[in-house]
Picture 1 (cartoon, helix red, strand yellow):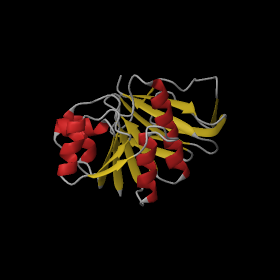
Picture 2 (cartoon, rainbow, N blue to C red):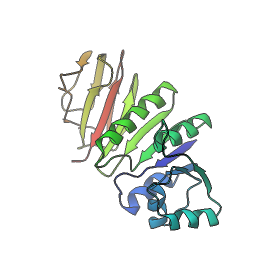
Picture 3 (tube, one colour):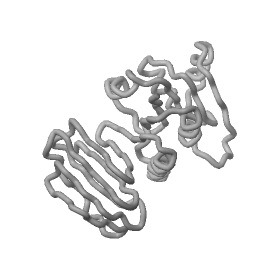
Picture 4 (cartoon, one colour):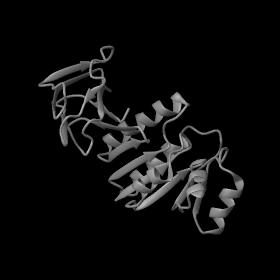
Length: 211
């Protein structure tokens, strides 16, 4: 099952959201993410948060239309996005895409990237997407289709990542090693219809960018 989480970060176009929610089994809006749903005319299954950023008229609209609401205190140990991710993980979803999870708040961006590690640890396919980037994490193998010409960056998420092998990239790696403090995997280029990134040991952050 595929779950989509919409947070309160950078807002994209309606076409962007439509592409990800058209085959979603469940949609969760995190606080101000409900404003996006209201703006573009789609109804989430659940809204979570402390509701410090959602328009109260929007929240009331979704309440009237039967959307489940879960309110949490402002002083809590988890972000609204983490609450949403854990909800989906505990309810058997095996794929989760996070939208509006990037933007001006770098602390939130980094926190959301760390949630990809949580999903990896729970054997759930996870991704963060915006109109320019697709962010994933792997400790084994990722296949990338339909991204020929896009930039691809590989960054270690553990201290050392070993046995990195790539195919379909301008600069190839065979049994490569990456370590914190030496980001030589930035700005490669996908040159084939399908690219492959494999890892033998460690956790690798994979970022596909259109610009």
